[in-house]
Length: 304
Length: 304
Image 1 (tube, rainbow over the protein chains, first blue to last red):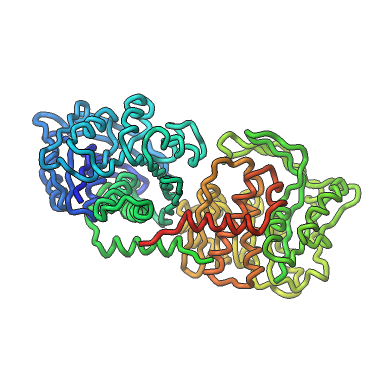
Image 2 (image 1 turned 30 degrees about the horizontal axis):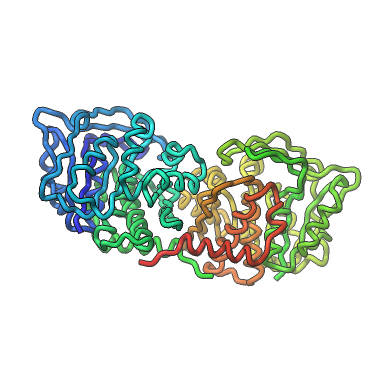
């Protein structure tokens, strides 16, 4: 089934205890769509870059079967740029530079060929832009998945509340869920979020795994214990991409299939952190993914 | 099979955002042995209290089938007392009072009737005392499980290193494993600990579950997502008690059975935090425990 991903395509410059990069390809939609490309063949992207964005990076996306018809290239403007430096524990980071550039007035134009997509993944960007996307689709997708961040909970709360009524699944991390609901318990936080609109809530806990709340049921997916986290950038988006990619591939939104989708998402995220930026998820095989998923089975299976 | 538990029996005074207690029964060995009592019938305790320790509290233990022959009551001396106050997130706490009292010169005397125990659980106390216990057993138990804490890693490192060579399983939390090994990655930390002696390492991550490393294999047990954590005191010891209790009951130290034991330990810990101190684990039924264990199955099971 066809998946539409909307969000940022960007330049990132990253610094971790293991080294630093020049400007490499980044952005939520990049990670999501690349990750999803290993699952679904109909991958449509809506995003915006400046004319400083190299054709070779766009080619990298199209080589993964991603339709870039909806990727606007703005003449004379510059691509969104983010630079960050991770602390030694890799769990916190400082933003060094944020240049919104083309993202400042991103108008998410949906190409006609993208209409009738069955699945919609709203990568992290301003809730007002995300809502525009929903409104511009002539037919409501089967499943709308939303990612957001602390910034929007803080400065665009009303927009976010309006948007939450329109989506099926909210993906956010534990801190964000606490910020959004003022509840420390993730169980209570998820219930409050469900009352805001999304029937399904996925709370990411980074190295501690992820929780799925839906239909009164709860599922916990572990994160793979890793020897080295080389660069966590994009891991959350890669997780979301694997999740929605698996759903789109199987065209099944049942709770049991969402559990599988979270395992696939977690497996994809575990690859993402192995190298800088999107490097690792640019170069994966189906065999590697399946082997990684099997590690999750081994890790968490027990018999009574 | 018979289990010997050695460690502190104490008074605790606790303060959480939900309220505060007067002096209630606490101490690592109390939680361990109470938790284990739901699994194994042969529960032997070695500990020391002062004569300020009420007989009614000792009766609470014996009513759970715990053999208190090895519980020394020192005339004219006072019981170990600890008082702590939890912060709002329940993940950190301040120690308000520590009065070692009888623990200052605890001599772990093993009654003859305790010799030939098959399983030994060394609850958190000074490594030199823990080692005395191992040396005083005429026959090495089938499995020796050790708990320790940051204090001993800091001030009794050489003693701890000596002791680690003698034990089979080390149970500690994530922070302690990092402190002991200077490795942030829990995978690397576990490998380093295994090189120090224990073939099996269990790293507790509190609300994030627990990891088991043994025989080159890794197992992850989730913690149950809870609406309310009322009081986390003793949760780690209760976990250890459920773990060793299940092992002693089944007399099976295989990796697969250790996985089950960790699930039982996690279930017991999830009860512990529901009320102040040991109140909840004083009053459990086998049906409640089984139902809780089944929640872990539901929480983490998935099919590909």
